[in-house]
Amino acid sequence: MFSSPVTHREESVFDRRTMLRTEGTVYVIGAVNMDLSGTPAGPLRAGDSNPGRIVLSPGGVGRNIAENLRLLGRKVSLITVMGEDSYANIIREHCLNTGIDLQYSFTDPLGRTSAYLCVNEQNGDLNVAVSDMTICDELTPSKLEPILPVLNHGSMVIADANLPEETLAWIAKNITVPVAADPVSVSKAPRLIPLLSRLTLLKPNVPEAELLTGMTIRGDMNLGRAADALHRLGVKRVYISLGERGVWADDVREGGMLIPCAPGTIINTTGCGDAFVAAAADAYLNGLNTMEAARRALAASAICAEDTAAVSSRLSQEAIELKLTIPM
Image (cartoon, rainbow, N blue to C red):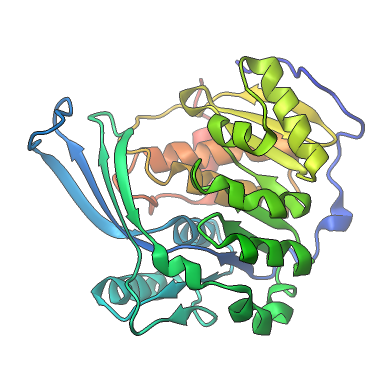
C-alpha cells in the first residue's frame, strides 16, 4: 500500500487548457546508443571472466523513450546525431521498423555513433557502465533553430541530459509546448538547471534530486520538501525514483505521495526509467492526473524489467492495463 499524502495543495484537477495538439507528434531530442549489456549467470565476480548472457541492442535514453512512446501508440520524431558506421546503420533500420521518424536527425560522416557498455548483477541491477557519447555535443542550438516551428507544432518535447547545457537552455527559452526531461545521471543532471523553469515533467532519482535542489533527502518528508523545491523552480510534475520502493509522485497542485512499484519479475533494469518517462508523458497527454500517470508509468517500468532488452516489445496500453490489475 502507498502512504498517505504528506503535502496537499489546491485543485486536484488536470488543467486541460495546457493540452495543446495532444494527438500531434512528440519530439524527443537526445541520445541514441548501441547498447552492449552483460548479465552473469551467477554472482558477479570482479576482476574475473563471468559466464552469462550478452545482449547487443539499440539504446540511448532519447531513443528508448521514443520507442516506448511508439509502442504506446504515439507519433514520435527522434532528433539525434549519429555517424555513418555499422552501429548507426543498425539503429536507423530499427527506428524505421518501429515507426520512429528520423527526418530531423543529423549525420556526422566523421563521427562515432554513441555506445553504452554495461555489466549487471545477477538479478539484472546495474553494477557498472561506460558510455562513449561525445557525438551528442554536436546537438547544438544552431542545429535546432531551423526546426523550431516544427518543434512548437508538436504535442510535447522530451529532452535528455545528454544534450549540451546550452541546448537545454535554448529549449527553455524557445519551446512553447509542454516539455519533459530525464536527468540521465548524477554527472549530467546539472545540465537541466536552465530547463527546470519550463518543465512539465521531471523524473530524477534521489541523488539527482539532491543535486538539483541542493538538499539532502532522508525520509519521505524530505521527498515532499525536495519536490516542493523543484516546484518552486518551475517543475509541475515531479517523479522521484526510489528503486524497488517505487516513486514519490508530486504535483504542484495535488501534493505528493509514495506509490509502490507494480508487481513483476526483474530480469534487467536497464531502460526502466526510460519506459517510465514515456508512459508518464503519454498519460499526461491523455489528460490523466499525476498520481494515475505514476501508476501507469510504474507498470510500464515493470514490463520493461521483465525483458532482457532496454525496451520491451511487449509494452502497450493493454499490457499496462493488465499489469495494473495484478494484486500487490
